[in-house]
Amino acid sequence: MSLNALAPPVALEHLTPHDLVTYFRCPHELELAHLRRSTAAAPTGAAPVALAVRTPPDVVPLRRSPLEPPSTASLVFNEGRLDVFPTDALVYEDAGEEEELPVLFAPGQVQPDPAFQRHGGNLVDDELGLSGRPDFILRRAGGVVVPLEYKGTHPFHDLHGTHGRTFDVIQMLAECRLVEAVTGRRPPYGILLYGDVAGEGAHEGWFQIPYGDREAGWMRYALATVRQDAVRPPVPAERNCASCPPHRDGLCRYAAARYDGGDLLRDRLHRQLGQFHRP
Ligand code: SF4
Image (tube, rainbow, N blue to C red; front, side):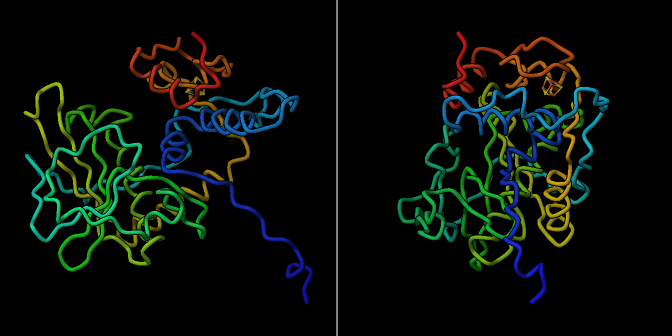
């Protein structure tokens, strides 16, 4: 027996779709968010957050994240409403989902699948160390099962900006992977549904995000990139820092802008992270 065979398995750093989005924005934000999470769970008297940050004090800030974005060359945009067919079924709905899906399913089309409730509605991928909750999951003709994310915003808002819809695409690819992990079948695509609430639905539309070998390969590359990054460098920029939750809590020394989260964002974050609330 080799020595390797005796070594205990190395635990993967647990990640979520939101973690990948955060790392794509600023690796240091992810580091601070994880430390805050683990510190909140630690017993009273544990080392303070600042002592546990792996980012060295003399780190050189970056202009962009080391994570290369996924290809968006094959996205398909469909203007208008998402058609739901009589053969479609809603098999999963995140219980914590605040947005109401602007698509009507007949009562007979709501068919919760217990496979998605094994961990209380949290989809878990033990192989890749990933977990999360899509907004919705549909089963379509032919038994194809696909995740659906609903965003109450204009489909082309900031589409070509630095953030743009790339954040949403990253989230979607991670959710496709989670559906694959739970069902054992790779969804051919995920659906990003936009509804312009401010425009009273005048600018609805949806993207079909392909999930094939290239996207599955990107997902493994992304998870490895995050886990292998022992520095988690900051990417200070106004677009990142002005709404950065760790910055709001005074945890970042590299911030390029004052925290400027609106009341809605702040209230939402405080609900999620009540222990860090600062009036
Ligand atoms: S304040 Fe800016 S540099 Fe600091 S963690 Fe947040 S986004 Fe990154």
